[in-house]
Structure formats: C-alpha cells, structure tokens
Length: 203
Image (tube, rainbow, N blue to C red; front, side):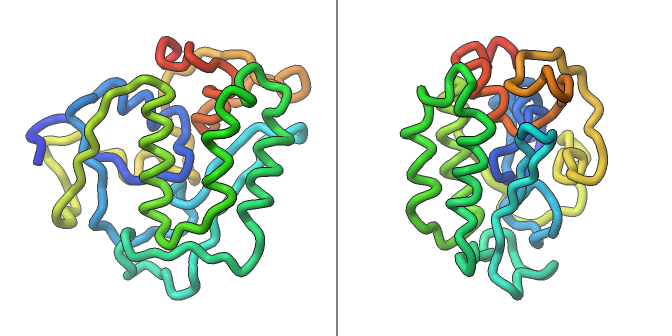
C-alpha cells in the first residue's frame, strides 16, 4: 500500500477531474476496491455532451446491489438494451468530433459483449483510456476498506455527481458548444474524442 499520493474510486468513463488527479499523483495512486457500492455516483454513470446539453448514461446494476454489496460484487443488469442506448448516445454526440472514428473500433466491443461485473467492466475501460491518453499507471488496489486515509488525498466521494468538483479547467472545443457553451468536467471521452492525442497535454 502506498504511503503518499491519492485514493480514487473505480468509475465508468470517469470525468475529466478524475484524470487530472491521476496525472497529478501518478504513480502514487491506489484504486478503492473494497468499499460498499454507493448508488447514484460516477461508479455506474457518466455525463456526455448531447445536442440538448448534458446527457447522463447509466449502467444498470442487478437489483439487490444495495449499499451493503462490495463494489467488486455488483453485477451489471441486461434487462434492457442499455449498451445499444449508450453506443447510440456516443455516436450521436461524437460522430462529428475530430477523433471519434479514430477510437471507435476500440470502444465498440464494450457495447457489444456482456460483462458480468461492473468493477471489471470499468477497470478494462480505464486500462484502455490510460493507454489512449498515454498515462503509464500500474493499477494498485486497496486490500481492506478504510473509512479514512490520513496520509493520502481521498477522492472517493470528492468527485461526485451531486456536487461540482472545484478544479481549474480551460475550455477546449466541444461539438455542440455553439449551442450551450463550454460544459466542464464531462466524461473523459468528451475530451478524448475532441482532442485525441493532445489529451495528455491538456491534462
């Protein structure tokens, strides 16, 4: 376990703020893998920029994944075709972006094949995103649940869907910004599809 650095949760297509912290604290980062699954967080939802403003995409989880389920044991639900909905959302929002076609074939399998566990799904997406952004980060995980980490910067609840995360973010080109202006702290895919290889320089 690292002595200094940061502890981060495992998110679905995490927001830009998540990657600014990874970039700031790498390689001294540990991923929370022993917490109870909290609902209505970025662990199973992400925000992208649609023609009408922010579009929330949520990965449904199997009923019974309540507060006392370990985050690694939460299963993805396939009761409705959410993968098709998410992929159509990504296509609608980013088909006109500079780099969507460049990354499209790598993202597509995540919306075609079924993954059992949310944590594993998010982890594989995160590994791919780190590779595309060119951040070298060997993923380390918590071995027990700790309510507090006195020596680490704790972002487990700081980066939240319920409150704005306070960090400096310079505007970059977004596909629909002529309609709604710049929207900060969207999913990293918004930055990646618009900035491509420049994403690491932006972070």
